[in-house]
Amino acid sequence: MRNAQDTRQTLARWRTARRAVLGAIVLAGSVVTSAAVMYRMAARDCASYHQVDRAYTYSGIGVVIERERGQVIVSRVLAGAPADGILHPGARLVSVGGESPATLEGWAEMIRGEAGSDVQVEVAYPCGGHKVLTIERGIVRMQY
Image 1 (cartoon, rainbow, N blue to C red):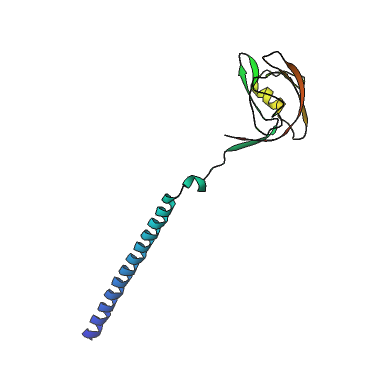
Image 2: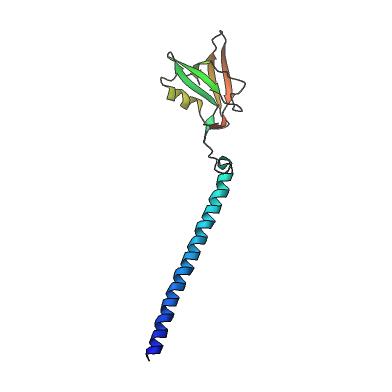
């Protein structure tokens, strides 16, 4: 009887040792696989795989305005926007839709509107030109 009990204990220890060895092999394989994946990722240009698109989309004419010495000035016209080729940087906004809002946010709200609708913009240029322009609003995508 002693012999059977010794055999069972030996088998139990052998099974435990086998489980430990197999667990170590699986763990080592996981570590090696992770290292290989990280090595491959580091060898490539990650920017091309993980590019974040930072853009703001709205409906308007596509100008960036700022306040300068109490006046609202077009500082930039976005390429491909409805105002591209019609308005130019440096233009001073006189009125939008016949109104002159008190704040820069008010000007922006007046310029924006439903795509396909028209907005009348009165501008004055530093060289002396003064115009009233009608621009059709469109969808503008501004990347930053």
